[in-house]
Length: 133
Image (cartoon, rainbow, N blue to C red; front, side, top):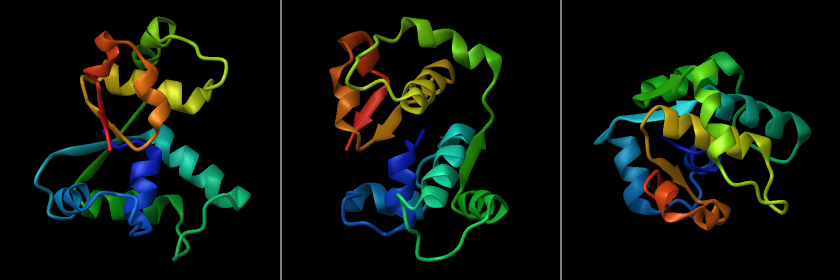
């Protein structure tokens, strides 16, 4: 599962996304997923001006572009919430979207591909669900 910032780095063709990950996504070498929560987060970040994309995207266009790349948008179900209580809470990294996306990845048995270094603070049992880049 691609984390929100990984999707944004891909869409912006950012040098912060490693070339091997960018190529893997571009050529659909692997099955990739993104949480519907990341779509919400991208909309919030673009509307607030915190993220600028080179082209104007609507939700439909964003989902369509992801689909064309072979990235499946996964719905967030009630059962995906259950793992939230098992995640440690860090006062200095309490972003509810990050926690919900990580919980979603775990519930779906996906590895979360992320550039967010804060996830590396989780214990070894949870690290198996992370692929830091």
